[in-house]
Image (cartoon, rainbow, N blue to C red; front, side, top):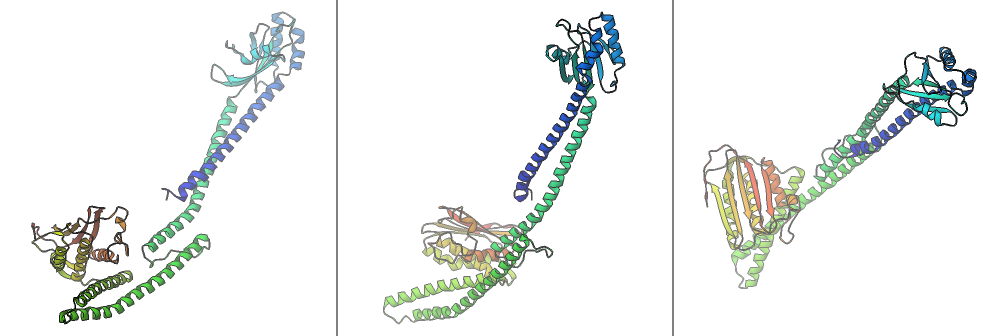
Length: 480
């Protein structure tokens, strides 16, 4: 489901977009809240450091001696009403802190806001940063009225940002958790929706593959409580399967009927042709040659009709076996005996090696022989004069492997996976229906065996038949 397809594309597109939107939303919220809180602190500091109020309070004491100014500074700090919100310091004209609302000695460090205020025309300096202790603060320094252009002192207000930062951290965690929850909610709800599409589509795909292989018995499951587009598509596919099945049955019945109808006249033609050749009363060699051609072509048509009948039975599931105890190697010997003269006439070098010991199994002797004859016949047809054909049987405790190899034209890598398909011919220049190998594969499968085709274009082809047998004692083979 997650390998590649609708689900993966949905996760990589929709979820990515939603993630980016939620990230942007979270960043915007946090930025807004951060700006709001820090702006509130700045406004608070501005309200505390009103220059006119400070000037009124300290104006009468600016040009007095330091002790009097310090006394006034202590009075200001002691009467400071916002002590629970902010910390307040008072600088003298030398830039030294003479009093603070904490009562503790102020550490000697650079006060950025005071330095900004000294260089600012407005006499005010705002700064936000971190102290040497690690605490984050926001501070405002306001210079007292100058005397002869020189500093007469300043007041500094400090608000700790620790509480605000802690609150922002909590809000950040809550926003992130909220976005994650929203994202997970979208993912699970989306997966549920996508799954409602993907699962039926997978079933439809599976059904399409069955149709492609000619299996029309099973239908696509349809949810009775739904009437969406997927359900309509499933209904259409089921209708299509029914129609194809009907057409396929008609085709098989037609092939079976025609094949049976052709059998009778072909048998008559073949019989009378053989009779005329045996009588041999015609002195004209042309007539005799013509009769031989008729007999040859009749035999070829008869073989084609038999292939069509087998194909029809295979398609309709009527290709059955008459199982009995047989010796597979004995059937192979009979098939080789039938074709040995033809192999010799074609000028093909022949090698035949099988074990002396029998290979017993439960099988249909006629069907097994049909497989051997068909595959050997194919090897002879595709092997030119001077080529080689070898048949080697290897017997193990529980199976028999028969290799039928030739040095013919071979099969290309593109055609090789298709040679066992019905009506497929890799080489159209050679006569044949393209059904025989498909029927052979079906017969071998019905015997719980396996047919493998190994080939290299231009070098030759090897057909390997593997059949299960009754356990035997292994013996060596010998050439025949």
